[in-house]
Structure formats: structure tokens, C-alpha cells
Image (cartoon, rainbow, N blue to C red; front, side):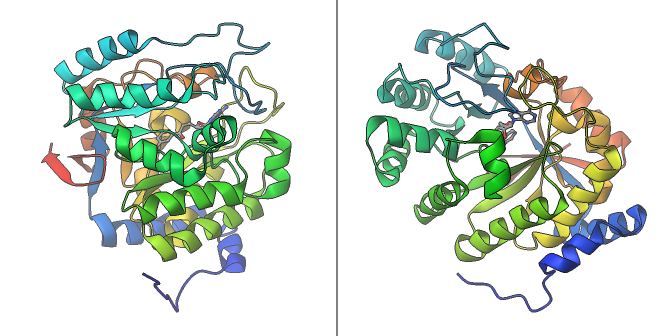
Length: 349
Ligand code: V47
């Protein structure tokens, strides 16, 4: 489906929005948010599992992969993974987000069997798994086409794809921060193919490192273009770069002002992506709550445990209790709505 929007914000206008008064920008984004979602803020009850941190690729921003900065390699057994899954299902978790490093030694079936085992036992549990970067790695390493890998994922029970690995699409920045892994065009091609299978995915942007405002707008424009073609993205997630334990030497973390501007502009530019997630893990909880007034209508979820961003300094390792999460959203003046992984409403809290 090709949607044409005459009143779309173009590249130059989007860039100029960065110079707008912060609160006017917030009001503009909030108007769009209210048109789409009213006062609702979505979240889900989820858990991240990161089965291995052994990685064939080297991304300068990554603190999770085992290397000189993180000398603790691990690979979980399927039994260990299923023990976690048994426990979280009992606790009411409805989505498991499974993302790993690019481990060259496990064999492709090791990855796929994780999903098969989970879905065999818990068909109702939503499996959001494998970033486009992992799909590309598995394709290169095992000599399979993207189509073959994506078909295997569907067969093994993957329900949706997370938005990781997008980083920044600008080729020069990408070469500097994560040379050798999935390219921007490949990332987009993989999601396009996934959407063509009738499946949904998310899309991230890693910002606050060496990129500039132009690179961010360019990233948003490329997302908007693919979304016009497929409509397959549920949600845009700007990930605030975490500075610790990695090889990018960023002395001044991005300011809250710049994060909020970027959130608001993304709400306005991405007129065809329904949801904007303020991922509290990387923005901090407080800023994620403020971001609700700058266009964000989703706060991800309770998470329970997360390893990739917490390795780089995010205070997210143990998630947030459900009651606390709901209370925070209510106290900030919004209506907490539990959603499933593809944004069907489950419960208004
Ligand atoms: O792809 C790595 C990023 C991503 C750092 O789809 C970093 O719903 C900040 O993609 N600072 C993984 N970020 C997380 C991710 C995600 C998270 C939540 C929800 C969804 C979703 C997706 O974390 C990686 C990479 O872009 N990352 N290192 C860092 N130092």
C-alpha cells in the first residue's frame, strides 16, 4: 500500500524543528500523539533473554559482547533458557524478547530450537526475536539467503522481529561505529521481506554518540519510506546511547533537551508509524515519563531483566515491578494501558 501525504515534513523542515522552542515542539508532538492515542500510554509485561554474548562482530558502542572490556563470555543452554521461560510464564509475562550476540559456534539450529521449544510449550507466549543484524549474520555464516532464514524463523515460531541493529543508517557513521555488520540497505531489505510475510517488526535508532542531527533525520526518512511501502513497523524506538564499557569515547552524553527534541521530531516526521516508544532503559525512567508529553505513547514494559544496555551503564538490569510501573504512568497524568506485542489492548489499568 503506497500512502501519499501532501503535507509531509521534509528533510529541511525536520532539521529546522530542532531550533524550535522546546515547549512549542513538545506541544506539536503532543497534539499528534493525542490525535493517535489520546491519553493512553501503552506498555507490556515482558522479559528480555540474551542467550549468548559471544560475538563475531565488533561494534564500538557495544558493551555486551564478550571482549577485552567484558571478559565474561557465556552461552546459555536450552535448559537454562526454558527454566527462565517456565518461571516468567508463571509470573504472567506475555512477551519474551530474545536477542543475542553473533555467536559463530552454536550452529543455526541452536538459535531456532530456542524458539521451537518455547512455542511448543507455550504457544500463547509472544516470541519477539532476532534482529536484522542477527539475520544477516546467520545468513552470511551459514550460507543461507535472507528469505531462507526468515522462513526458518517463521517455521520455528518467531512472532515478530525487534528493531535492534538499525543503529544509524548513514553509511559513514555506520562504518565508523559498526563496520562489517549488516549494512543499512540490508537492514531495510530484511525488514521489508519480513513485512512481506505479513509479519510486524519495530525499528530503533541509536543516537547520542558521533552522529549529528542530519543523520537522525536521514534515519527517520529512510524508515518513513519503507513504512510507506509495507506498513509493517509497529513502533519507532530512539535508543539513547549509553557511554560505559565500550570503545566509543564519548565524553559528553546527550542532554535531556536533545533527547526530548529528537523524540518530538520523530513523532512528527514518522507520520506513518503508529507508536513512539520512550525506552526507559536507555532514557532513564524519569525522562521516559516526561517524553510522554513529547510524543511518546509507549514505555516498553516491565522487562524483568535486560543485559545489552545495562552492560553499557543503563540502570535496567532488574526491570520494574508491574505495580510501580502502572503507578508511575498514572502519577504522570496518563492512562496506563497494557497491550500485547502487536498493540492490541489487553487491559486499562
Ligand atoms: O541493537 C547497544 C543498542 C540494541 C548500546 O524492538 C545500545 O521493541 C545504547 O534493539 N547504548 C538492542 N544502546 C536493544 C533493542 C531494543 C530494545 C527495546 C525494545 C526493542 C523493540 C528493541 O541496543 C542494539 C543496539 O542498537 N545498544 N549498545 C549502548 N551502548
